[in-house]
Length: 182
Image (cartoon, rainbow, N blue to C red; front, side):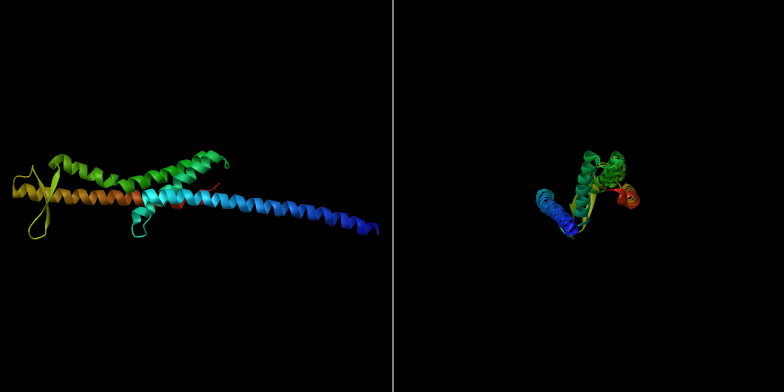
């Protein structure tokens, strides 16, 4: 009889523990709802101002940048992991590279050399529907040929620099992405 009473008391204490667990589950459920609503609001605010179309890689870059910025802020401020500043720095470097790609920094730098030499170009649509670029500093057919050759070289150099930046971004992500958590 004594053993049954002990077992009965033990079962009652287990029931109390189960109630605490149930309460914790309910509490976690509502916290998760609150967090989901907050995240959804932030995403909708982002999507409304920046846009999120499915047809352009530029939007993918923008979403990656937005998410990485949020991750860097979260990891750095919560200080859950020991290397939080290093991880945030890695994320911010990826954002820096995305900014370079989005803003065309590499192409712009390559084209600046051409523009400094030949000046700004004007786009002229010909009657045939052809698009031509004209420069005030180009005075002869030889100069026009040289200018066209140099703009093609500048364009290739800009594309090559952009590809290099893209490779740096994705190599960086490949190396560190599985460490970006707290």
